[in-house]
Amino acid sequence: MLFVGDDWAEEHHDIEVQDETGRVLAKKRLPEGLVGMVSLHELLGRHVPPSWADLDPGEAAARVVVGIETDRGPWVAALVAAGYRVYAINPTSAARYRQRHSMSGAKADTTDAHLLAEIVRVDRTHHRPVAGDSPQAQAVKVVARMHQSLIWDRTRHVLRLRSALREYFPAAIRAFEDLDAPEALELLAAAPDPDSAAKLSKMRIVAALKRAHRRNTEERATVMLQVLRAPELRLPGPVQQAYAAGIAAQVAVIGVLNHQIEDLSVVVGSHFGRHPDAEIYTSLPGLGAVLGARVLGEFGDDPHRYADAKARKAYAGTAPITRASGKKKVVLARYARNDRLADALQQWAFGSMRGSPGAKAYYQALRDRKIGHQAALRQLGNRWVGILHGCLKTGQLYDENTAWNHHHSAAA
Image 1 (tube, rainbow, N blue to C red):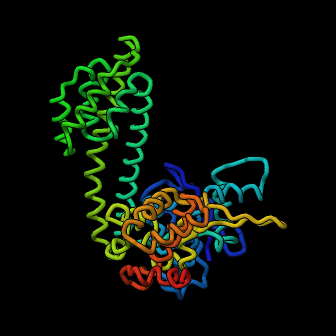
Image 2 (image 1 turned 90 degrees about the vertical axis):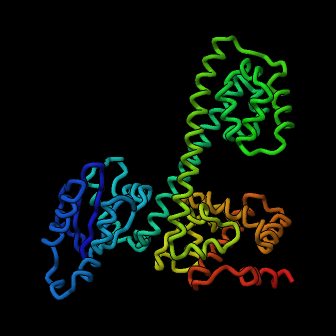
Image 3 (image 1 turned 135 degrees about the vertical axis):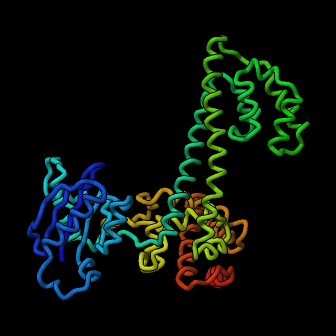
C-alpha cells in the first residue's frame, strides 16, 4: 500500500508518500487545482510497487490511503473520485498526534504532511474515512447548511437590534413581539426612534399588521400605540438620531435575510424532495422538508458509513460518554459533535412530541425521573436517531407501534 499525507493550503498542497514500512518515497509541493491533481497522480504512478502490475485500476487505487485535514472541496472530491481511500483527519487529533513527536510546539507544512501520512499508516482504524455520499445528498447538505447559516445570521442581527433598542428605545421591544416579524420591521423602518414612533397613526399600524396577515389588527394596534406613546426616559436628540441610523441599517439587513431565507427554503425542499430517502425521513414525526434536509445532509446517505445504530448515535452526538477512574464514574453529554446536526436533532425531538404519542410518553417518563428538559430532549433525540437508522436500513416508512412497542411493553 501507499500512504499519502496531504497538508493543504489555499494555493498549494504539501505531499509526502510512504510505503508500508514508513519509508519516505517522495516529498513534493503541488499547486491547488487540476494541474496539482494530475501531478499527484503522476507522482503516485512513479512509486507503484511491482506487485500491483496485475491489479485493475480500481483495485490499485484502493491501495492508496490519503490523510488530509478536511472533507470538503473539489480536491477531496477528486481524491475520492479517483478511488483512493481518503481519511479526513480532525485538526485537533492531528495536533495531539504532533505532540507525540515533539513537545516544542514547532510546526511546518512539510512536517504536517509527514504526520498525516504516519496517522493513516499506523492509526487509520481509529479515524473515519470520507463518506461516499451521493451527489444528491451532497447537494442537500450544501443548501441545507446555507439555509441554516442564514437563519443563524438573522438571529445574530436580531440580537444586535434588540441590544441597541434596549439602550435608547426599550418601548419598541415591548410593542413588537418578534423583532424579525414583517410588521415590526416595517414600522421600525418608518419610525426608528421614540419620537417618530409616538407619532405613528393607528391606521398605519393596522395596515402593517394586515400586510403581515395578523389577526385582531385593531386590538393589536391599540396596544402598540399605548406602549409607544407612554412616557419614557429619552436620550438627547443627536444620540437618538445616531441610534436610529444604525437601527435602520439593521432592519434593512434583517428584511433581506428574511426574503433570502424564504427563497432558499424552497430550494432546500426541492433538492430534498428529489432524494430517494426523502419519503422515509418525512414519515418520521417532527421532520418536514427543511429539518429533514438538515438531518439527511449531515448524516449523508453512504450505506456503509454507519455499521449500526450505535455508530450513527455516536456521530450524531446524542449518545452520552462515560468517564471512569478508580471508584469514580460519571456519564456526561457529548459536546465534541457536529453542532449543525445536534441543533437539528434537538428541534426534531421537541417537535416530534406533537405528532408521536410514543415520543411524548417517553419524554414525560424521563421528566418524571427528575431528568432536566435538555437532557430529556437529548435522550429522545438519541432514540429517534436509532429509529431513523432502522427505517433507512430496512427501507421501511416509520410506524408508531413498531417504534415504541418495546417501551410500551416495558412500562406495562
